Length: 390
Image (cartoon, rainbow, N blue to C red):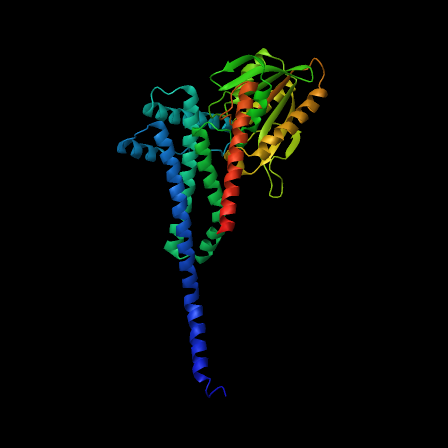
């Protein structure tokens, strides 16, 4: 029977198998490349949208020359210092950060000479967001072109699996850029927002360090509260601020409040308490605070508000804002255990975008966050109802 009427079917079957083995991987590779191409093109457009928003905010009708100059500036990079000998690496990093800040400030001044300090900080942060978005898009494009050049199916599969995570981070960078331009608090602003609630009187500005400290009271005890100088988008230099502040005031305890990276499965806005300096970044400022704490025997308490990397860059979610009540309770518990004569310094770590330096400004920022989240929720519900009607 095999050699009878089914011979043609058998031949067709073997031809199909041969085509599948020889052409299957190529067809699969072509489909993968087409899908990744679409995703990369979308990411590049998102990065360009961030670029356009910043340059239009800097100059309403930017010339073609200015657009080209700004686009070229977004390729700005910092070379990590040599760390074969770790001695002195902190000083090198500090020097590198200062030079980066000077370069970005210089560019903004050249485009907008009359810009004030608050807007300077907003644009400085927005440009950093646009640089991050462009770098992400360029790196993904690099891997795509490498895959196409060497026909690397395995790497194409790996890249396709990673694209959703990469794309979310890029979208978060674009949203952060928009938030900085509009002076809207982001997830990382939770520390400064809580600090601003207690900044009642005797404000003192440390202009060079972009920091402010004020007196407040918790549980009937006098405290000092510090944060980056708002409402511009800046994290300030808390380590350098503390170096100056500690010369005039004896501090027995420092409480730092900051956003912290959550694990998948942890709830956004969950609060954790520990010891040490709750502070992200490259590590220079945290190193300086730790050095001062060790030298002066200062107790270090840390409170972290959990959120994802994307949530820390995006406009603040209600879950994060609601966590502030629990953070305040945790602070009160720590203060209760302090002796009456102890001086406590609370530092709200993070980007103070859209948050001023007193309780009323904190209240205004909270109202803005609530309104934004309400409108976002209504928009989602409208989109959902429209989808079901279709």
